[in-house]
Length: 355
Image 1 (cartoon, helix red, strand yellow):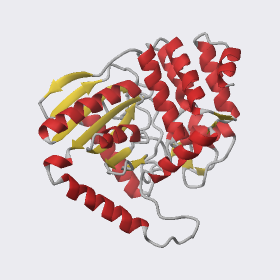
Image 2 (tube, rainbow, N blue to C red; image 1 turned 180 degrees about the horizontal axis):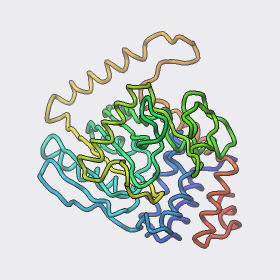
Image 3 (cartoon, rainbow, N blue to C red; image 1 turned 30 degrees about the vertical axis):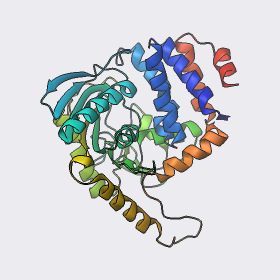
């Protein structure tokens, strides 16, 4: 099925509100999830809604919380998310950091104890919209490890995203947003919901053997694992993300005996740079634009596939999905209906909202 993005926001917002959130928070969560779908990152979109509702029921996610600065050293701050919605907490933490970067030229934000922060690129785009460069390191705790180390055969850490963004005068920032695993965990969930196999080289089963079956990642008895992207290089970057996000924030790292709740908790270390306090802004933007133009003018190896820069695929997908709707497979739609049912919204009501 294809559903209009505004109708999908309305549905998600209604479910989140019924689960206990105030209207402003419900809208922020709905915006974060639906915007991820619009950008083509279905792994971080509405497919996560049922898990969020379950986390509330299990007291892993606490609605109506706000970012709290617990350490303040001027240009560097530590922010506690109080187990609140990441779509709210991360946005507030970024606002703190942007303000500090404007004041000091550079800000370091250590965010911890926050429920799933969604598509990390959203927070990089928030910084770039304010004219800032940002670098983000993220790790995950409190759920089973899902990514095997290079040369390993079972999960030892999460997908540990790395993100970096540069602002642009044309409103098209450079936004590199990637998991350090071959694909994000949620993309395997989407493949499972669609009943599709995944590409070779992304998964191993519980015995460490290659597989294309997405179900192995969700088997609680014989759980498989994702593989790092780029062999040892992706693995090395995952290690750095784990330590930067988990150790420097004191939010925790994956280790033997760690607390397992099946709740998605994130920590994020963010470096925010104000270019205006380093160089002439016009010169900075000229360098960015000149480089992007140079790269994209490379003759495409395949005529129908022009050279892109990070951020272009998301912009293209937003245009397409705003015009034609967001695709949802039947399993994901049923999970949305079940999430609504859990909080007291009848399936018929939600279906009617989808029109």
